[in-house]
Length: 178
Image 1 (cartoon, rainbow, N blue to C red):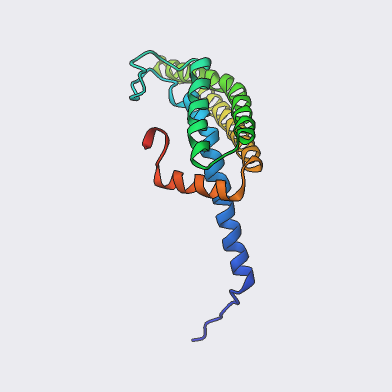
Image 2: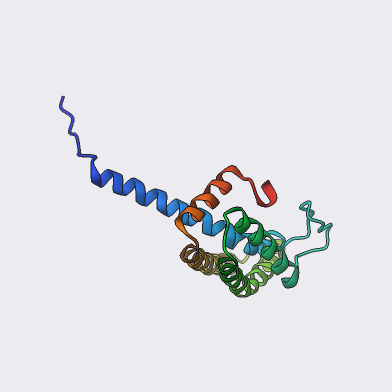
């Protein structure tokens, strides 16, 4: 029995570095982008999360923006971001939130429609499938918008800062989990 060996030199190292870079970019950017967008999607239903939303329903746009600004400011201070970097990242987060708010509202309406369809006397499978396909499209749109914000934030931050953010995320040292 023979085994083939493949050279793992430079090519293997490049792949490993690229994988790490992608994870670092993804993790650090997502953390900042989702700090704000999570406020919209995470508080869509009326429930208590320990943040003072005792059954008050969804967080309004102003509250979500304030929350996102606070979370972003805290994260950026931990990585020694400059005031210019913070202003640029805050603008990116704000723009993303403006784009994502209507998607949150679409999700609420779809949930309501889904409950009506399932609770009906007869099940309209075609309507449920259209609703499901529409929700996949909404999630795809939201995912693309968040990723765009992630990449914009990655362009603003230095590699060392992105690495620090990635470590913070991995250790869950900030946000609701910290």
